[in-house]
Length: 276
Image (cartoon, rainbow, N blue to C red):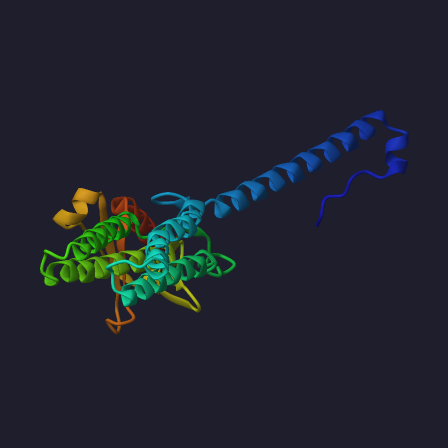
C-alpha cells in the first residue's frame, strides 16, 4: 500500500501531526531530487566519449586547407606553362592544371563528407573513437611534390637525358597521388567502440559500416612494425567467429593503439561480467 500523508483535518487539531506532515513532504522532495541527480549523472556518463588520438574537429578542419595548398602549385605551374611560351611541352601544362583541379575538388568533397556517428541502441553508449593518422599521408604528399619539382627542373635543362626528368616526374606524381588519396581516406575513416560492439565507418559519397558485437570478439591483436614505431603509430585487429571477410576489423595506422586495445579488453571483460 502507498504511504499517505496525514489529511488536513487530522493535522489541524494536532501541531505534532502538522510537523510530521511537513517532514514527510520534505523527505519525499529530497528523495525525488536525489533520484533526478542520479539519473542526470548516469545520462552524462553515457554521453561522455573519449577521442583516442586527437578530437573529431581536428580530423576534418585541415582537410580543405591542406588540399587547397597541395593543389595550388600544380594550378599555378600549369597556367604558367599554358600562358607563357616555355620549353615545357604544352600537354604537361594541361596535366598540371587537371591534377591541381582534381585535388581541390577532392578536398572539398572530403571536407563535406565527414562520417556520422553510428546509431546506438537504448542500452548502448559510445565509449571511444579513433581515426587513422594522416601524418604518413602528408609526408608522402610532400615527398611526391618535391620529386615533381625536381623532375620539372631537370626537364628544362636540355643537356640532361629526357629519361631522368620523366622518371622523377612519374615517381613524384605516383607518390603525391597516393599520399593525397590516403590523406582523404584516413580523414573519412572512424573506429567506434561502444559497450556493445566495435564499429568501422567510412563515408565518401556513400556510408560503409562494419561492426563486430563485443560478445562475439574472440581475439584482439595490437601490432607495430619497425616503421610504425618510428612514427608512433600501430594497428589493432579485432576478430570474431565466422566468415573471415566479415569477422575481422583492423584499425590501421592509429595513434595510441595500446589505449584502444585496453579499452577493447575492458569492454570485453565488462560484457563477460554482465552475462554471469
